[in-house]
Length: 228
Image 1 (tube, helix red, strand yellow):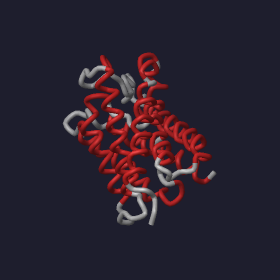
Image 2 (tube, helix red, strand yellow; image 1 turned 45 degrees about the vertical axis):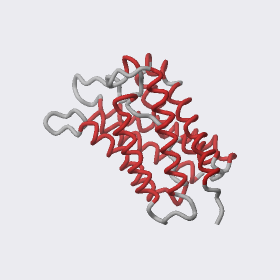
Image 3 (spheres, one colour; image 1 turned 90 degrees about the vertical axis):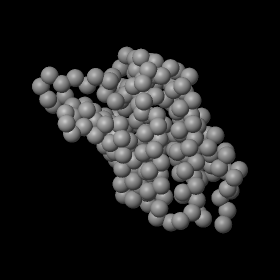
Image 4 (cartoon, one colour; image 1 turned 45 degrees about the horizontal axis):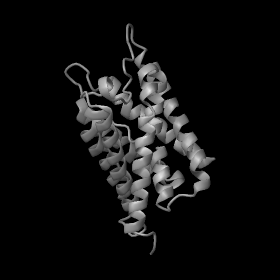
């Protein structure tokens, strides 16, 4: 239960910190942080939680991460479903808090609420194929870095920094394409509040990250077995 509570709080923080920066600070007049600031915010949520709850739950914060670690032989399959449920619920809670914050201003509208999308709902107008490829590849690389930096032979205490910086880089690459998911819990949390098109396109932001995670787990397990 402690692990699940930690995952809930960590995913809440990821959504609130990352999506919150996109909604509240990215386009703020004169002081807007832009895409680069949002990318850094997502990375910072992972870095801060890695050191806060990494020793409790492993700090997955993402169903794709849990699935990739399971495929790579690093995570017990019995815990997979409970972890995913805790992550999705934490993401929804984070989005709920953000909704209350965003709508606390007179005349405010949530707009796309930092949801993920393709076609007309891609920040750069990229189509479904580009979005699918982007999410698969970005998630693959994310899990590859996670599996490598947390390996028993990797330098200790640096994993959180490596993973957070990797997520920052991923956002710098893919925000224009899909608004960056690589995390089904993050995508689901925003889509529930937007509804309509966001729910209609949500399938891609579950399927693509899971495919990327499974591939990364297989490849890294082949390259570097978990052996001393």
